[in-house]
Length: 339
Image (cartoon, rainbow, N blue to C red; front, side, top):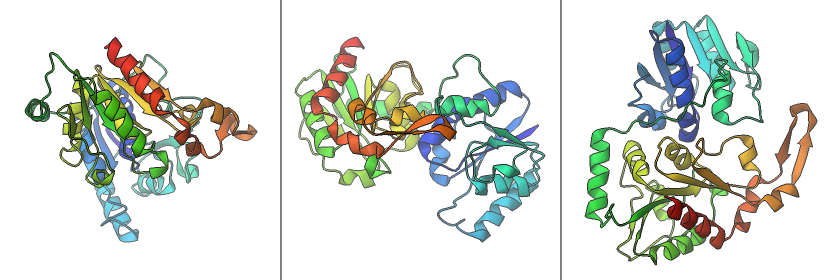
């Protein structure tokens, strides 16, 4: 059987789909599973042993517009897939599968273009996103973890960087801080991150690693301390994953780093969220995790939507500034003491 997963969303969404990949391979061990996604997402699943091929759809770049759509469609037709699973909730993804004449197409009932699906699955707002994706294959068994696969070369490089910058794994605890996000409204104030990092660095047993993209390097975090290093823009996604696998604590916004960190057993993952955002099901998929949000703001700003049978919080991100420096610092210290 030839199976195609179509998911052209953000990196964090792709990470959350890795349990789905694993479950499909368990259900169809002799199948070939291909994954259609954005070029920026390729590396995070590039070493996944359950995938046969990663296909790229640069819908915001060279494949933008109808010409790019038909370029990708031609490839899908040539592959002759038997089964398509579509986590992405937009008509373009479903239309690709339908026009490629894939016999069985499964997706969510809330997706635009869901009328084109052969099977519609209810998108349950009360569940975690990983559980919702597993609903696409009717799975409700034991918890399937997120899995990211950095190579040995990735791990060796990161260990060399850390050692060269002063990290002593025998005597120090590592805290990885990811202060950025592709969506600025999700970000806790960079000045507050700076204060937390400063307080953490006062303890010589703490080693703080600031991470992010080249673009996020512009966020003003400058420390002249031996136990604080800045790797923003210096490592790729799988090297970043390797870094997270070595951390004792990972702290960041409602963004991909906390989801990637959830794929490893060692770190305790701390997410700083807009109030009520956790209830949408995008919190860390890991027992060793916690979400910090302003619940009082949440309680005072909800609207009930009966037809969807869930609560929707107005202005999700306006509560983020209410989260204090001491609260985040205290949570990190608590988890370091437990590690």
